Image (cartoon, rainbow, N blue to C red):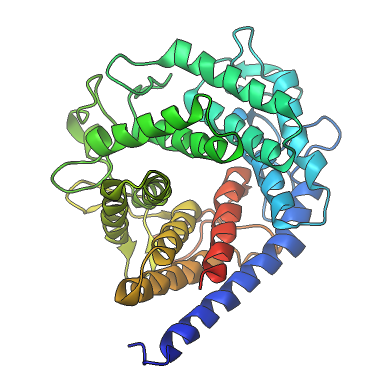
Length: 392
């Protein structure tokens, strides 16, 4: 309980500051240098898919999403004050995409081999959202580079032309063509462009996706986000329509709180709080981590626990904390501290700057390479943690 002089709140905020400084030091001194030195292909361009726990790069295929995410990571690192070569790192992934993945229709192939041969020429909405996100951050760092803004608008217009669905939103080129996840990342990219280059098509796109989420993706009875739908945006029949991922509850919560504040939409902000509560139902009390997947009756579908849901739990808790007062503020801060302590366990690896990706049900980590794709989640939550520490 907070005393009249605010002693308890000050103590909790001090704990949060300590946590943020620890993450900051790991990011700036260990992770960013390591993933540039070993995770980037400095000879051929682009980024590797991951690093083994001894720091050896993973050879073989390279996905569009990893090139986009790693470019964004280093652009964000520059904005956060990293003194390393963030600009060539950020530009390397986008240049590699342009050289190796670009299709005649303006989209990007899904994956190429290590020598740049196209392995999967499919253009996927999910992948393109990370190209758009990286472009937005680089443009925010360098507003004079108007070509980035134009390229992003052209890429998004291509998605609109090829993927627009009559019932709203977009159709994905995947086994499940009507899914909330691709829209979630498109909303993130749209909000990034709303911040970097307001107007154009980005504001309308962000509004459209947020409204589609509120009206169709969120279950009207229980308030959780479902994953897969039919062509009318009704839940997919069978088990496919029953998935409720805790990490996505947190991630959508963070996005809807941002959009709700931007638009003064209290319904979105209420939904964000409900999603957070549902996400916490997927936190295993024994291990203290958010599991990978639940069924819509809140029983475990996949009780393993990947790294990324822990990062999303932090982001949502901090966003809701900064917009709250009193007991609610204290509760969200407590959740952010617990989630941060959970995430830190994934970063305790033999080589500092790597991470474990999956925790088994017994609480031990599965010995496997660190996927590069997780860096996007990690640096974003560290950036959000900074913002939470700046909040008074």
